[in-house]
Picture 1 (cartoon, rainbow, N blue to C red):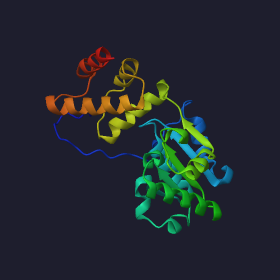
Picture 2: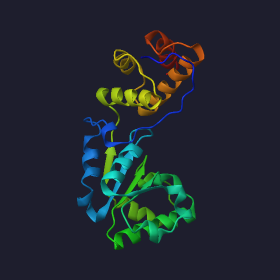
Picture 3: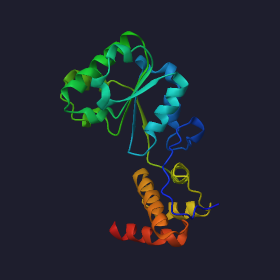
Picture 4: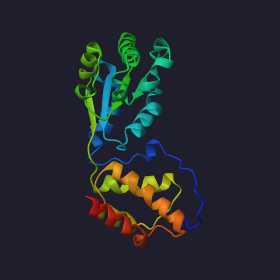
Length: 226
């Protein structure tokens, strides 16, 4: 049943393996992360644009490897020796550039996990050379990581992302709406997130289900703004 009541329900982000859609644009990255027992030096850098599935894939790996996940900007509040005791994923490693304490902690963590032969997964939007790191040793270590890259979405993946984003918001839409949106929206993960949020907001505000009629003005305004 299509949601019609104007209740602003909280989103519940599904991060299980069964919720991750594999397509040609992400298959190589999924395979690389999944082969974590064979990572060179027991480390991997997962790159991808915002909304591309880095966090989701990190959680899939967390479940498979018995790993722990921590945000890079929280590293200075943790004990690196404790973090290095098991498999670890550090998210958004590119966001600590310029934070000398966080950069130093991540460098020590790289050394500790290497010494203890524990797998270390880093996620970031950009390659290390573009992070703006101040610690040369950290830059050198980060650049030596093997890389798995989540590429821009193809039609199948973009459709799956839209379905998941609606599902996370507890919204059911007609199946025919998804290809309609895919064929008219900006082709990026960020655009998918923004579009679903905008459709949800308009649906709540107007007390109408999410249909082509509701979506058309948003898509038209998006196209005219480009």
